[in-house]
Picture 1 (tube, helix red, strand yellow):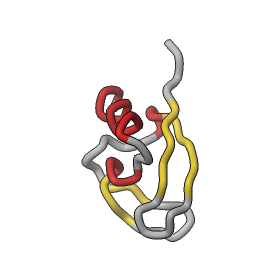
Picture 2 (cartoon, one colour; picture 1 turned 30 degrees about the vertical axis):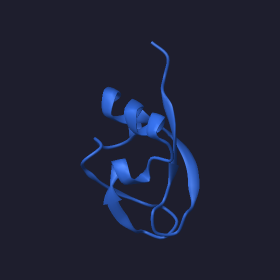
Picture 3 (tube, helix red, strand yellow; picture 1 turned 90 degrees about the vertical axis):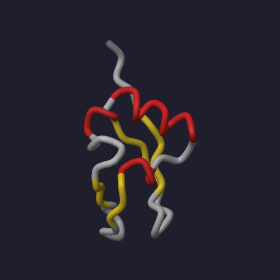
Picture 4 (cartoon, helix red, strand yellow; picture 1 turned 180 degrees about the vertical axis):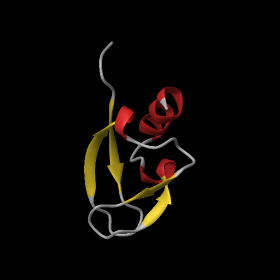
Length: 59
């Protein structure tokens, strides 16, 4: 099975990066930005609607 990567953007500091879905918490769980240490549900970090769909489908 191929690994799924999604684009993320911090809702607080707007830092952007990519991450493997398998390394992320579920969409409703809290996630922390490495840049500013801000917390929000993982779903709020997804950059696009497609990224959110992949996160929800695979987590």
